[in-house]
Length: 167
Image 1 (cartoon, rainbow, N blue to C red):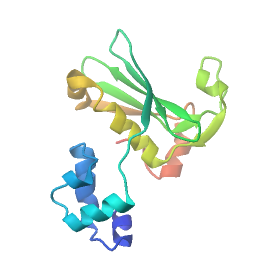
Image 2: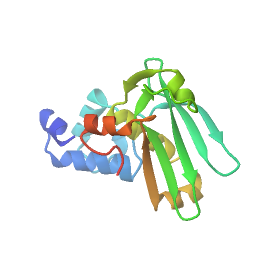
Image 3: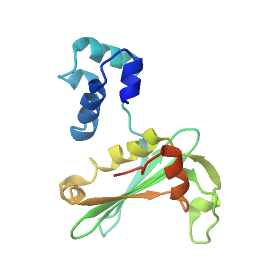
Image 4: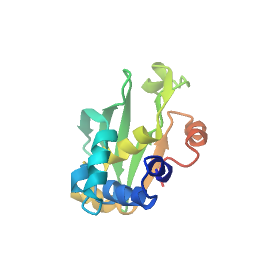
């Protein structure tokens, strides 16, 4: 993101400011990013957007597990799952739409492999899951794990993104 801001003729520290607004404050409206110059806010509104995937379906199990079916475009959908535990919570994000493996127990494998998700699509799942987990779940997410589900082969996607999808 630092390189992107530099390409736009902006100072590199602007990336850190915007990332802080998005990820720490949960803000997606550039107008609300009050420590950015008004001219930069206007520029960002013209050339960028902060958008999480659309929730197609949401489910809540009796044990508190939450599942979201998210639209990632091009006719593809992925599941993001939050699993609460006594001392922590785990948010599982998908790294692929579909799966090349045809495991007997997995319905995702039956649809075949479609594509690897972009880094933005993976992060978008966190943006959907975290605010929808409720106050108790948010407390647990403070001591959380983030699991990357590649529907069988997450390690292949780690190489594509050059890093772990979640930290």
